[in-house]
Length: 470
Ligand SMILES: [Zn+2]
Image 1 (spheres, rainbow, N blue to C red):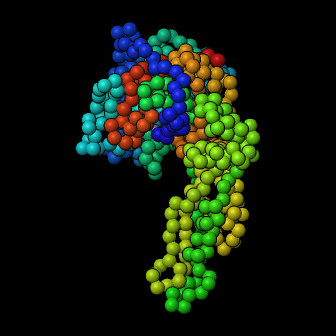
Image 2: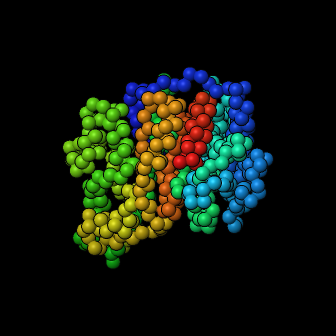
Image 3: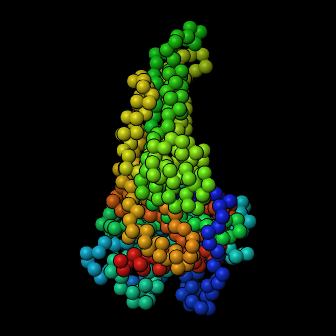
């Protein structure tokens, strides 16, 4: 999970909290949804001790019980990873020419130790208006809602124009684990083919008083790419130093990288963010946002925004030194010095272009720049068309009148990093409004407001229905 919470907590609330909690008595489907949610949260899906395949089987059972034929509910278990499986399910559309909409969710969760938590992390516990438990927010709320959507649509005999697909995957939360979304993109591309996908990545923002501030929509992500800088040297005895020194040469290169600033680059997501946010923030900061949105070359306005590290990262590619090694003995001249530069590349920019830029900035051919590992092709920025934003704004208006929809560009990365390069533009939208502190995602005592869960469920139900019919 990544989370773009870029609004200042001090920003004046633009809307009020919903006053009427949905009650299970009024909506018999709500209890069934809560059972689904509870079952997911209480199925441990950590990499160490959990079982995503079991979670997928349980969700598949719910879909088959709702009447989905076995052919439309497929479990997948990558070879050699028996507990890291997932699920693809389909509700067929009526128009063979209309491309599908993919509901994507990872069901794995970050590790959680009972002794560290106040409550059992793998029990869904309701307390003080919150649900507590690992995954209550990231992202079993949305995973359960996706399953619930399909169950409800089927129950109502809903015949979507566009085929609706569901993919539940494993391995998003653990670096180096088999990533189910990546596996699907590589092995089951046809099965997940869609005009676009919806997943996590940004939520709604509440202020400290619980008022709705903004509904964020993640519309672009940067790509993480490492570069190795390396200098080699014949070395020698440190009692007879010479001017040519691998560590000094590397240090000089790093200084230049540190001093360099990539130019501001606007794509739909960060431009729309600046425009929407400028109206919310107001003042000198809001004016600077509007100026940069209109003219990314406005250095004075950019300088105002760059004071905020979130904004700074949202506006451009960044590269930063993250690891350093060099030398082999305290009394020897270094034969080798090496640094890792971690770049976060704007969508649509190739890793080779950044490599070439680094070489220009360093300006020293003796500093070798190599790419240690490549994750996959670079994605084009996802377009923020009216077909994407229109339904989000329409449902948001129904549920949270006056609360602005704010597109964001996320400097981190989610499963969209595998979908976008596969040609499936992926947007992060949940409708779950979270507290300013992030709700313990990845940390202790993860939680979600009960009302936020109910509202988000309603939001995603209506939203997917709108997408399915447009
Ligand atoms: Zn997540």
